[in-house]
Amino acid sequence: MATIQFLGATRTVTGSKHLVEVNGHRTMVDCGLFQGLKELRLRNWEPFPLDPSSINSVILTHAHIDHTGYLPKLVRDGFAGPVYATPATVELARIMLPDSARLQEEDAAYANKSGASKHKPALPLYTERDATEALRLFESVNYHKRVRLTEKLSFEFVTAGHIIGSSFVIFDFESLDGGRKRMIMTGDLGRYDEPIIPDPSNVDDADYIVVESTYGDRDHPDYDVKTKLAEIISETARRGGHVLIPAFAVGRTQQLLYLIRELEDENRIPILPVFVDSPMAVSATKLYLRHTEDHDLEMKDLMDERRNPLATKRFNLARTIQESKNVSAEEESTIVISASGMATGGRILHHLRKRLRDERNTVVFVGFQAAGTRGRRLVDGEQEIKIFGEFVPVRARIEKLENLSAHADSREILRWLGGFKRAPEKVFLVHGEPGAQETLKNKIVEKFGWQVEIPEYLERFEL
Ligand SMILES: [Zn+2]
Image 1 (cartoon, protein in one colour):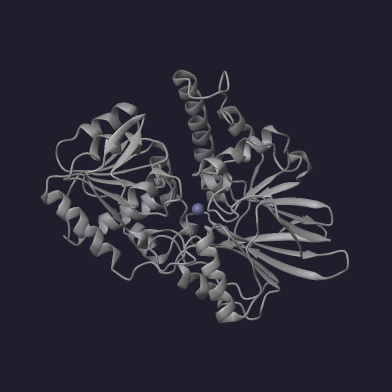
Image 2 (spheres, rainbow, N blue to C red):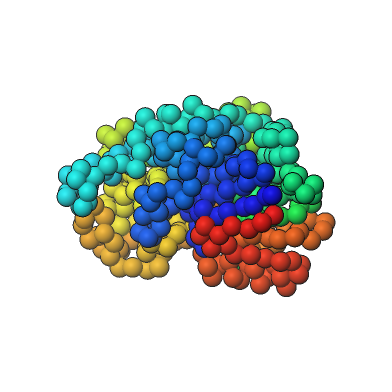
């Protein structure tokens, strides 16, 4: 008997958790935190839908917090099995889970100070110690190495092309009635022809496909992203303004540095001080340079020439709070890249509070902005944004560079699905908002005639 139950990222883009059960063995693919809308965030605090100690193992597709950030809580509540991830994902998690815990602890401390919580005292969802405990359970698994979870259930990782370490999980299992099945789960599906990271792996055979659908109703615009970025930087510099880029510390930040460095090499932008203001981005950037198994050829060539492909001419890292404060006091035009990418927390908030009110500045969003986040409100054109309890007028220009998203758009999802040589029994759409999922479902049905499900929260299917 084999089943899959969807414990997160159902009709939304966060909280990825999918429970696969084969003949009594339970493994969970991803263990993400819910983010964005309050009704979703509250799920992080509800009792887990099943006893965490009954789960035998966790498999992580990649290190982003909406795929890993619930793990410390799961471990504190009783999960004790191994956590399988690729070597780069393991290293990233060592940076990101303690960082996530610190944010939880800061939130609780803030709630206690401001009296904003009805719980006294307000407690963090988990602590740095819980994160450390969770990290002890990690086991590093290379791409294409088959891991046997039981006699009848095994999996392997192949590259997903999303961030370094990102992978699809390919399960092979035999149910009690003797049927052999293959299921592939994408985690986040990357893009084709991107710098640094290789293309998503082509897979041609599966009985079940669980695929993300963030951009299921959209194609990334056709404009040349480098040209648009060059225009934004040059025009902002001409006005004497600053360019502020909220970005995931892992993935987007490195992609941006690569592009800005190229634009400088090609003399297409003025040479401005570039600040990466995020301790995590600093560590992640080093890690990007080290994990060459995840690089594409272009990046490898530059490194062979002993050039740092991620260092611009006037490159600065801000590690400490004081360094961060100095960045936001800069008078000369700067480019500042800082987390979080959806402006839900982190140092970017201090920069936004200072820079949003000046019409010379530009804020550039480079990733998907989930419903309920400040990032979404800004790209939707709100005139005023609340930051640290203060209403800040939005006078800066707000730009979107969707081409820089690390997620496949609808064309690319269909291109990837087109690689399968036979019809799967079922395709499950996860990690998307309802409109995007309905549109993608219709496209898949129209193009391939396959059976597509859009699971509800906690819905379970027999495989
Ligand atoms: Zn991701």
